[in-house]
Each structure stands twice: as C-alpha cells, then as structure tokens.
Length: 380
Ligand code: GLA
Image (cartoon, rainbow, N blue to C red):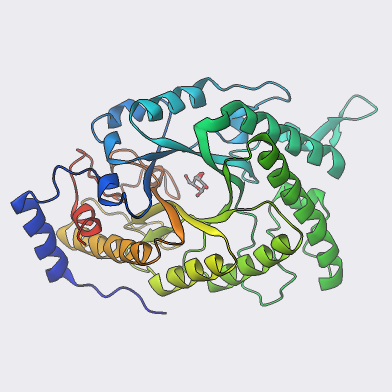
C-alpha cells in the first residue's frame, strides 16, 4: 500500500503563494475544473441557505437525505416531495445540476419498515414475499425517477450492497445485514452453490431497479454507489459484481466511488486502480462523497481533537491535492467529483460515528473561508 507522502513545505508554499497573490481568487472551484468534470457538493434541506455565499463554487448538488426512500415514500403510496423539490429549486437558482441519491439502500435510517411487511391473513403484520418487495422496488424507482424527470442528470440506483467481509470466496459478494438480501434468501449458513443461486435473485432486484429507472428517464446516467476506502477485497468484489451484472445486460452506466477518507490512511494507489478497473469495463466513474476526516472511521472513538491544527491542515491539503491529481489524470473516465458536504460548520461527521465530535473534513472552514486543501486542489 502506498500512502501519501506528507510534503508540508510544498503545500504550505503553494497555498501561501496562491493566497498572497490572489491568483485564482476570482474563479469558482467548478470553473477551475470546467475542462475536467463537474464539481459537486452535498446539502441538506433547512441548512442549504447558510451556504448561499459559497454554493456558487459548485456546479452539481446532491441532497444528503431528502431523496432517500424514507423521505420520499414514508408510507406505501404516500409520496412527499416537498423538501427535495425545494432543494432542486435551490440548486437551479445557484447554477448547480442535481445528482439523485439514492433509489435503494438497505440502511434502516433510509428505508421504512413497511417495504418488507404485509398484512397477514389474521390481520397482523407478516413478512412480505420476495415478489411483493420487488414490485414495491420497481414502483418506487419508477415513481421517483419520473417525478424528478430531467432535473436529475444522474441517479445512484443502488447504494452499498457489497459485503465488507474479507474473504476470497467469489460467491461471497453481498452484505448479510440487508433486508433486500435476506428476502432473496441470503444467510450466513449457505454453501457457495446455494449462495450463487441467491446471488442471482439479489441481482434480479438490482437489474429490475436499473430497468425501471432507465424507462422512467432514458437520459439520466445510472450508477451503483459504494465505499471502497482502503478495502482491497471490497474493490475486487465490486469488479466481480460488475462483470456479473454486465453479462446479464444490466442497464448500468457507471460506478460512484464514495471516497470517505481520513488524513491518516489514504490509499491513493488503490483509488487509482479502482478508477482504471471500472473504466476498463466501459463504465463511467463519479466520485460521489469525498471528504477527508481527521479520524480513522473504524478507529479509536475516544479520540477527540479540540482544534484544527496547522499540521492537520497541511496533511489534509496533501491528501485532497493528491486525490484531485489522480482525478485530473483520469478526466476521460470521471464525470463528476462531489464533496460530501460544503464547509466545516455542518457535517455528518460531527454526528457519525461519534455524536458531538468535532471534525474538519472539507475544503472550506467553518467561516466558509478557503482552507489549504482548497488551494491544493486548484494548484495545477
Ligand atoms: C453513506 C451514504 C450517504 C450518507 C453517508 C453518511 O455514504 O451513501 O447517503 O448517509 O453514508 O452521511
């Protein structure tokens, strides 16, 4: 694994020179990248207005939560588009196109319980069948993609289906903690042959959703989205899944690499390799959720920093700088790079994985000033 070399002096000098001379100050971030790819950010309903001053830096926007299943269809057949529509209008007013995120995700925070439940013969709730769940999935995808129509240029159709298991068994592809997979018959007790048969049923669910989205909006690009940070096994499993889906004629256009990283363990070689491997399959790449936290996500949850030090700022700048250097090198493969947030005053990382822990993951600080990372990203 080749991790990033910390080159404090060069980033510091580059940042200082750019701020001092004012060079690049007038151009927005997306303008620096107009010959490369779109530059996106994520926003939330209710807090988008606090970013009025810097929204113009971006030309793509993703709603953090407002287009997830539980927000759009909290009860069967009861669609609620108020917040999402409001955010689409905000994006348009600020010159941003909109990415749709996401039609299907197993996470209970995003998925209402009714999807897997029916009324039993005795009038009590019973577990819904695979066919019923599939029908609901197709209905949701059709309804939602139709509603937003041309306002959305790309959809994350499925989010995070691949297992985090470190095994080399290439039938062990899909996560066990997903009700979508359980309803298709997946369990930890299956033999590889049994698992293969279940994998086909799981993939039928994916393919049906991609089909529905394609029919509802033939112009939107359709993505599979997942995190792969520093997990070589997961990256390998992705390639196996893509090969299986493509062989079955799945209407997939590309892969979203979330890219939630931290400043201590950025494996840029793996990231670059993944971009190349996805593209070799004829698929587009988008970086959908990039940030560089100060903390290792699965590390010591007792760790708490009280301030964003100069060393952190420079290390983060070198990480962002290296990542964008790779993205520029592969501009023929990448169509959008989205930061998962806007500025350090509002971030999911202040809540997850440790509630109330301060983090500084973005290009703009809590006062919306450009950080050294910003200058590293435009230094080319
Ligand atoms: C994943 C999801 C996002 C978001 C983040 C945490 O990356 O794709 O929608 O929920 O987790 O905020």
